[in-house]
Image (cartoon, rainbow, N blue to C red; front, side, top):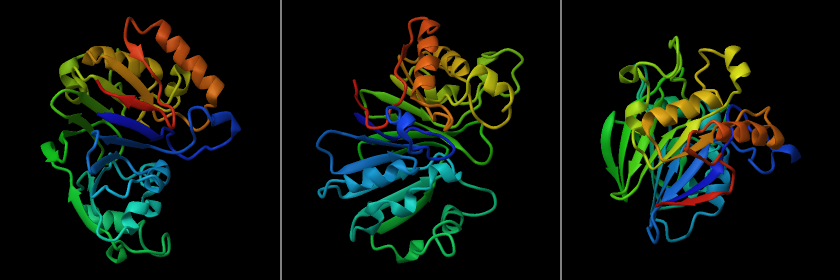
Length: 279
């Protein structure tokens, strides 16, 4: 399993000299198997623009798994080159809604006046799917999806390829409503997805002080993310969804402190352009 980070930022793109190392593009992670002719993409933030520009010609299928439909996670979708490649099979998966199907909700963005090209006019072989809660298959991976604590319909994903497991919970506030976190693991949002995963990519947007001013916004502090990873028994934590106001030096400081209290947990904060080869 090869994991490459094309966008690691949360909320809004933040490209500037002070964010060059961690990156300024919003959430997008590519996962693939060696020598496969298919690619799996987690979220379609602005990072998917760069991913699309490097998509190999021999790729025949792309599965885009959206965690939710907040703008920072779909902002790059209309600029994804794969959508404009005739004959390429593109599957977009997103959480279901009690009000509208996925196609209708995405069409609110991918249509005039917000975007000049409609979904129906794209030349790729496009299929849209409401994500089933539970386990389903895409080429190379068994995917498990579950609802997680974040405003609006939001899911986390667990990817298994038979030897390695990767959990992706990009926007998540498992501490919401807890007197002391972590507490009562049987009620903890997302724990089943992350339990025992080889790698966990998880929201770590705030410092502890910032979180106090953003309770209920659907994100975690770095300390809460570490506690969640330890409760889940993961081997390797990748903090993700960095706050747009946090520059490289601030993130270095935050994650140095996190490692000091990690209790043996391996921590590698997500950096744009970085690649993990698992196992």
